[in-house]
Image 1 (cartoon, one colour):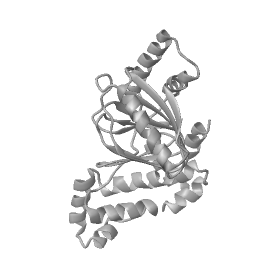
Image 2: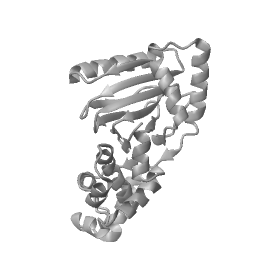
Image 3: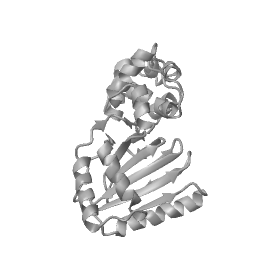
Image 4: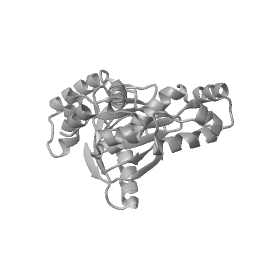
Length: 271
């Protein structure tokens, strides 16, 4: 178990990342814990590993991208990444990360999923990450690993994945939306941008993303708002900028996606 600070130069960070990947692949432990500190704007290029990864942000917000979509990981959550899946990451803010790597035979995954990290899982991961400074007995380490593996199977899933279309024209509109989210954005407006009928557009959007335009729009508004909320901006400002008519409508959608109101969610992540 090791903690790595990647806040130095980009080249030093890339070298440290490659070194840690090699260590992860060759260690004999069935569960490997790793802590990293990243500066805002840091990017990890596309890579993969044979082990299943639980990529968790203790502080800050990170964006993980694959060929099939993007997943935003706010504090208190983690992305389950299947072994062998190529992915890249971008730090939206300064990030303190705790990551767990598990042999796929022990904990496989059919696809990326954002999970809420429970207090128990967080404590167990912390024990493993800090074991370099606070060595664990073989028995305690084994018990922690076994309990953690069991707890991972019970972590609640949160809909923070944002599928991205492969169609270049549609992808351009989606990227623009993330920069300027609008909860009242209409299907007809997007269809007109692509010179398509409403019916053709809705078919294309679902075929490209797997979800309806309305569902994607709702998720994207929360997706785009998270970094600002974590940075401490007032919920009212973020909600209005996202196109919501009032804070109640924003809070309802936020609670539906994250299981609590924005204020309660942020307060629980501040500790």
